[in-house]
Amino acid sequence: MSIIPAPPPDLPDPTMIDIAGEDWLIQALAAHGPVVIFAVCLASCVALPVPASVILISAGAISAASGLPLWQLALAGILGAIAGDQIAYAIGRAGRGPLIRWMDAKPKRRAGRLRAEGWIARRGGPGVLFSRWPVSPLGPYVNFAAGAAGYNWARFTAWASVGEVIWVLVNLAAGYTFADPILFAAMVVHEATGLLLSAGALVLILWAIRRVAKRDHPET
Image (cartoon, rainbow, N blue to C red; front, top):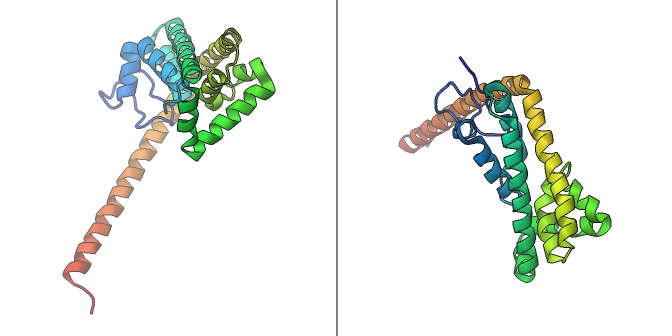
């Protein structure tokens, strides 16, 4: 019987694929891996809150266990990431004023914008590359900042694309190479999560019972 490993602990409810229907993400990766990876990588590069690196590692582990072609996942991830970079750059270029106002509306986004602008100013093309990997959380902000600052499009595309290739391949390779440890860690976290949720539910039930008891029998 073929077993497809679950995602690493960062993803919710990790489990084995042969426990039917426990995790929609694992089911989706197993059935439509390249499409899911393309969408995830694109979304992450336009600053949507997607744990893309974790999902790439999970996809690599699934490839190792199920025979899903790794090259298809790699190609989909690279194309999705490059497409996301281009979309974010275009948004920054076309809507510099509104984009800056939107990013400055919240302290966290403003901090990311200022950091990205400083990063590009100090490091130029290599800064764009390193914002894909290993400083990948900065990547989406660098995309928007590069467009808003009018950074040369061809130079941005070249450096960003090289960085995306490295980012996708490193994460997929990590999942593919260490599939068994990832599966073991996922199962441990799954069991621990179940125990924590059960304990939490018990605490809430006891708290509710105590409140009802106090309401029905107030202390004098």
